[in-house]
Image (tube, rainbow, N blue to C red; front, side, top):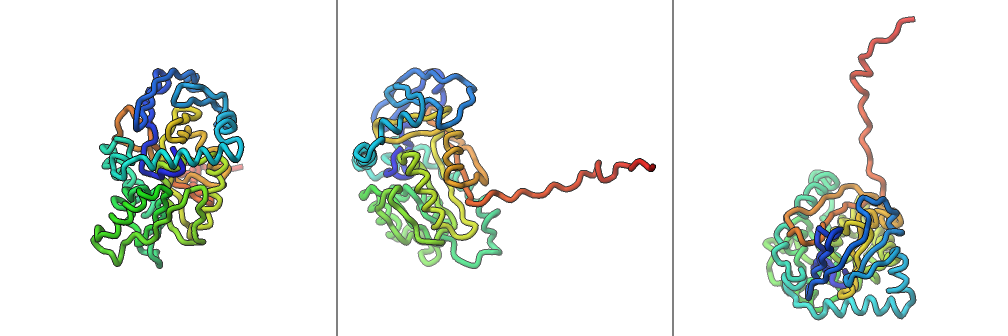
Length: 321
């Protein structure tokens, strides 16, 4: 994963059978390796072991990041190589999805199910006094904006550092694709890396981040979300959709990205001061790909409904003294 090919690539999909054979199929070639994690082992995510796409094991995530991005030169190279990888990918659905164009439909369908629930609960139609505005991070060729976001938001901004991806998105979304250009339209196209982007204050109801956050180091992950919080309207949310490793992490040496486990993500969310409002597993993908999960993240702890008093307790006869 890369902080550049934002959202439109599966970033070296990982076999669901990782704990046994561990097949990683990148956009160019498969890699086989053995996996030595202990099943069901409880780990603190930052201390969890991980692998790279050549089968090399790292004892901790900190060890891996120290080696890959431990000084300014290495960190610059990490991001440069990531962008370079995606600059060599065709600006097509098959290209940005790593040769798995067949996942486009189930991806959009499952995302739409999740989004409609979030909108109905957090932004009910009768309470909206302003247009709904979204930011598509890692927008690539505009696949998610075109097929999903533009239908639910009055305005969508796109953020993508790979210039030929963004130009394709601009051409597609400005060519009269939308059926109602006055009510639903793509507005701004930012050719900026995720780690360097700061949104306008209080602009977005939803910041959608799909298949791109794995290109950020842990430090830049936390820094991005802390900056991006400022861009949310009151009550606004983040939606993060990403590949999930079974345990620890998997480093892709080719596109310079890291697939993190659910525990790893939750540790980073905590460091960002974010709370999981809802989550959903992606369905309908080929079995050989990484599991994919969606998280709706809020800046405030979700409100919990107060429990009604138990009827059993309420109607229990009292002891008369």
